[in-house]
Length: 232
Image (cartoon, rainbow, N blue to C red; front, side):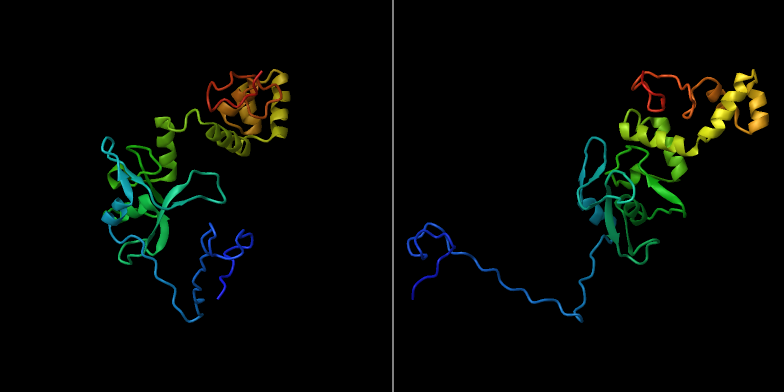
């Protein structure tokens, strides 16, 4: 029986004396039936299982996560460690959650509704060591991050701060009215009484530091992530 060519461009015409190995045929896998149950997720049932998925930093004590990561599609945030927690006797289990939160729960620690697990010791987003975490609200976490200066100097945080300031700031039309009122010789206390703005807002508009000021002063580039003026 003549051997069939191992490939269409086989120079020998058949596999006898050919330098190319015969093509391997993939074994056909039967299609899953509708009644066939899906395999159950393994997830993590104890703290040791999570620890084995990490690399332990001997110097800092961080449990650096090396398994699955998840990226948000709606928000531009850094990828976060994710794990399925199937143990039904743990509050909040049976769902996909951050590995840091799962480690916190499997360590037997409580977390109240509205709280998150913040790595206050190391500030590493990929560390899941329960000893490095604390259960706080998001507002408390952001205040702690700002105080520690973790995000200081990062361009994406500067963009987020500017976007939030633009969203919460006094509208441009109202700023123009206040500027015109200041031009008549009014004081900050007069602006506060007439327009109902805070003393800080009135002073920023008077000094041209408001994000919507028509004469917004230039600032030194990269001097601070909170500097929202246009560079000269």
